[in-house]
Length: 445
Ligand code: NAP
Image (cartoon, rainbow, N blue to C red; front, side, top):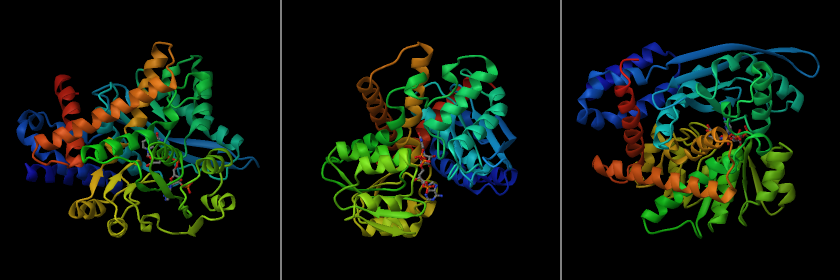
């Protein structure tokens, strides 16, 4: 079986040259699912692995727009519709200068299994652009979003493909994208995008969901070992959507987040990150993390510093892919870290994961731990379809139950396959089996 998987992987590398993040994501899944394939020869007979690694559709398009001075810019837009075995393609849009096809494909591939793990009827997809919203005015961002949607609209729809936010795409961008979709199609199709504002069809708790969900997952991991978040010293990387609401939930559960970051460095606040200050800085003023210390003079800003050098018991990486190298993982272990929960997608390198494994650190991969965002997006779709809207408390309870279920399934699957406590294997095998069974049932498509 291993030999067969090696040859599948070699084929993926050959057919997708230069897409190293995609290769990395495929490698991780293939490394985990061999035992499931051995038990289910029907998967291999139907070439499920070969089919799952090939997106159903990949769209690349030109996005021209003019800045406030009238200068014309040309960006590239992407939507990879990876797998629709379980439902309409579902996954966010990322606007960041580092975006290229390999990033979108890694994210889309991960999304297939993450969405399967939620148990909800959603397939996997991802999109975005190499546009950099940083430093752009609201009007420039609006013009970009309108141009992006002028092509994207023909590929999406509430029963076809339902995008949401990711890095660089938050409530402001989703509003502009939804407005343009409605204008072009002349349809008020609420379920075509999730992460909408509460004023026009958005769902309670969607903004908070990924961060809260990651902390609910962490809480379950701790509970399984007879511990709790109460009194824990925590470090979170990033200071965007996922990071802010992970910090909020840790504090609500009695832990203390002492450090967070952005791409310029990190802040250390031994009294605990002040969320009011952080939200105003990042959500309202769209400023840099260095400005945090102006409001909290006892805190320190470390320009260009590595946030993983701050000692902690629990780490929640919530910025970007491959932000925890083997060295950073070793620094975390040396600082007493016993639990790592990925709020971001694939933030730990394979070498970093090995360091955690060897040190006995309990490790939750993003496709399980950050699934609360997409699960709550599916709840938004449900509410849109029934023209209903639920309370914050009801929605948060649903999110908590979903995260507890995902945790329980990952844990049980790892045990079933003789790898107790291995959340990576549990998540990959359980997600894979769900998609594989649906693909088998639907024939050779
Ligand atoms: P966001 O609001 O745009 O925030 C991203 C944060 O990460 C910012 O603080 C940003 O700092 C930092 N960051 C981004 N790229 C970086 C880089 N190359 N180096 C260092 N720092 C970097 O995005 P988000 O929605 O929180 O997403 C964060 C992660 O969670 C991503 O991996 C995303 O795929 C994943 N995720 C998000 C959701 C969701 O619902 N939003 C759901 C599941 C998973 P700067 O501002 O300095 O760039």
